[in-house]
Image (tube, rainbow, N blue to C red; front, top):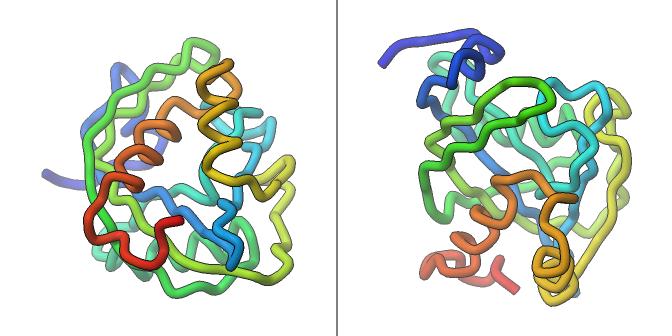
Length: 164
């Protein structure tokens, strides 16, 4: 319990902390993926779900996620909490460790995103079938939390109409 700066929470083996991962789907059921910018402090250059982040102290989860989605992609979307999980991943390149209590959020978006180049190197839309085939072939191109969070989202009973 308590507060920590984002980088400090990922150093020295990481501290368990709250985070969120957002999955936005279009009307065709495709997921909006981002390639993390090269300047990201960990897992840079890897493909991942639409957006990730951490709530600020005292900030409501949905508000934090909607704020971060706008900061990274210039997108406004109503988000729905679907499930939660814990995961742990170490980045050997940066030496940082993710030890997160992850809230998985889903939403819909059919517009043109405007990615922040300091956050996002590239983006694309992909079907779940294509993503699962890519993960099976070589998951190292993706962030380590992405397949875990994707599987949890797809298994969530309450994902409702957001789930493809």
